[in-house]
Length: 105
Image (cartoon, rainbow, N blue to C red):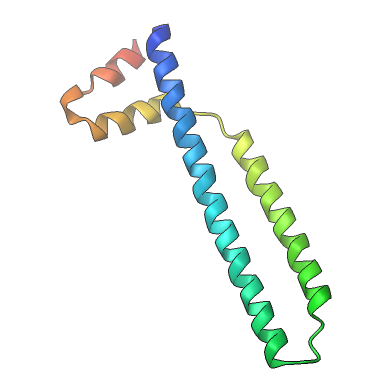
């Protein structure tokens, strides 16, 4: 059993890592969405008869569904305190596996 102050600190770190991972996924998602919008604009510019509004509606629908899936999958994940401790120990080798030993006890 992990002592409460250590658990709280590890949960704080896990929460920050969890949010950073979500932000990275959403940044990649919005970048891909912007790229898809740019492609639609270029196609509409090169082909004057291209139905831009239905294509934009489809793009918005796809982006909304993918955004929802990203958020849903993110909320389902639970933090793994052992993995967080391992990550902290890799960043701070002076701990000499003391953090992992404290978690295992």
